[in-house]
Image 1 (cartoon, helix red, strand yellow):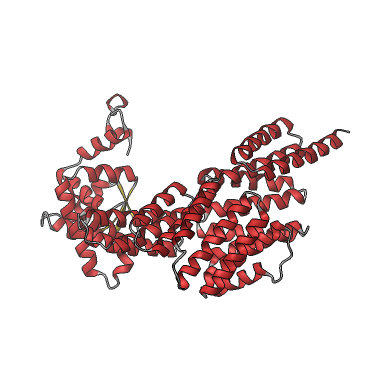
Image 2 (cartoon, rainbow, N blue to C red):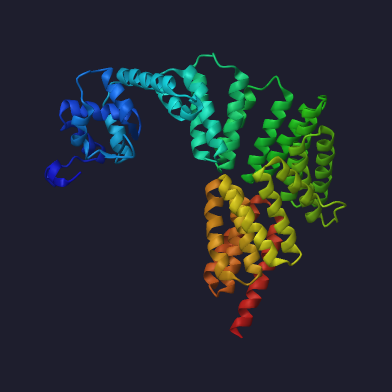
Length: 482
């Protein structure tokens, strides 16, 4: 796309979209038709499918005769494919088709792909797209669910969110043809992957929408409320999360069975984490002990692993010696389950234990391992937490130059996912690093910001730690000056 082809600069349209539109309008009618039909297939178009699509409208179009005229818009891509040079070019070409024609073309492409596929799951992503835009919401619902599950299995969280949202919308447009419990399952999955991706507001909305469809099932309701509480705690809304947990436990008071016991265990663990955030360590240990008892009664290994991980953390903060090595038991369970997220959480907790024991290099190794696993999973929020912990180990080792970029990364992610407590923690640590590197004014800015955030969150124990850190770091600076 060059200025010579488009005319003088004075002739250029005001917007880029108008610019692309004007260039498409200058194509010969059949060239323009080929381009618009290619756009129906997405940013990448299979030429064999495109030929079939063109044949539904005109049988006299020879694709090979028209592709040379489209070099400003598409490039050859692989075997028998072309790719739009920019998504905007594809979008403008697509919007030029009448709405009814678009729907018919998407229907044709969806049917063609479905008929030709040996394994329809393998093309579920394309079938989701085409059937949705064809208005075939019954088929879009089926394939969007499948595509969402496939994306989750690959830890492609953004793609999974897109497909699961499309499934929910397809169900809504299916006018009650989809069972409410199935929609609730998809909404819960959407909440889980949104939480993992750090999209806390979206996660809360999905969980609440799922809850509205589960009102007759107290165990499912309580499970969803526990997940809401988890997300609220990330957002720093600890009192609200604890109220939600208490409401959830009330729902299960008269409910027996292993599923109810597993859910009660999960809720008790969530309550313990909230009390830890509030500095109520003895109460956190009491709730974590209750969680372990309920999980043992349920016989549910994932719940037991979660409870043991929480019990280890509660013992650590309460300053009470463990009667058994809960963190390692949890890690073994997660390894047996193949649960990478659980393994990463346990590894992170073992790093905290090593850090407190003064085994700094060992702790840094644990944190780096946890950070790498969280990154692989696309779990940005926990990745930020592990990154902060690794930076903390580096600070204690006196390796400030290595700690600073880790803190920068952790702060960016924490802000993106809205983890208010972690933002304050990173700012405090960054302030300490700046003080030790002699950047006193910069340090004061970070520490003041951290103080304001800890105060707003009501975290008295972190404010006390901030005071200690300031005194220690300023003492180091004064020693350097002398």
